[in-house]
Amino acid sequence: MYSIQDHVPVSIVIANYNYAHFLRRSIDSALEQDYDAEVIVVDDASTDATADVVASYGSRIKTCLREVNGGHAAAFNTGFASSRGEIVLFLDADDYLYPNAVSEVVEAWEEKTAQVQFRLHIVDEQMHVKDVFPPVELPFDSGDVTPELLRKGRYQTTVTSGLAFKRSVLDRIMPVPEPEFRQGADGYLATVAPLHGEVTSIEDCLGAYRIHGANHSVFAEKLGQRARWRVEHDFRRLEALSNQATEIGLDVPDDPGLRDPVHLEERLASLCIDRDRHPVAEDFRLSLAAAGAVASLKMNASRKRRLMLAGWFLSIGILPRKIAKTILSWKLVASSRPRFLLRLSKTIRHAMG
Image (cartoon, rainbow, N blue to C red; front, side, top):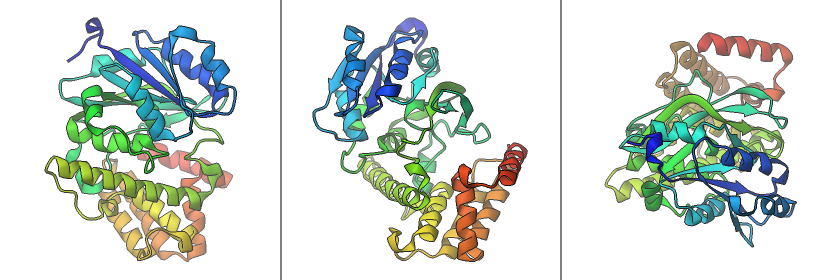
């Protein structure tokens, strides 16, 4: 649909809250694109040195300074309202793009595209590359992903900084509900945008996803709290999916999360780690594990990976709870794994690729 010669207007919206020490790298990466893009920085009422960092760029960027902290969704909504691009990328302030990111997105765009997604390098605070997200052995879902969304409420996609959206689609699905998606607004967008077009995937890494102790999704590696938040976030996503689908005449089956291995993994973790605070009172470990095993066998992955994951689910359902909790933590929090298991997991991962 587009080519580099078309000079399609593109906006990069950087959402920031108290990430002054990362923000400059993020802004620089947007300004250094080999394709001209409008750069908008939304500061969500930071209390650190963000104002000084933003001011140093002068008119090279458009700045939106929120007076009251509203969270991820509020920052997205503010930035989008100020943007003009036909293609809009949302970039978290602790992440950054490679210089060819926008040009590759524009080049890949097709007539029916609602969303482009690309892989990211996982980097540490010093920008050392540690891995790829999503892992290369997990194929992206592309094209019309609506059937997969309706079946299990998820498809293989990525996080905020690896996504680009068509403006006309965002006009239909925004503003992002702010109380419901104070964190994880990208989960809302990536869930409902594909109902209005196709997903185009780029296999190359076009940016960096920085993992550090302050990431919201890390929760300082408090496994039960993290799992519970992800389960509740999934329920909010699924509600948004159901509402959007109903508007265009589609039906979402009851509890599609019970067909989603990612959701079931977190739901099991929440149940096992802190049953008293688990958000679904009627859940049982064995039934969730059985559902996880069945869902794993239907994944878009290698046969070895599907069988290994199905076996893992069954072990969580059958083993004594104390052992199950340990095995859960080993899978979900890499730093909790014994050294021998770290080496073994790398070997298994390569074997299942």
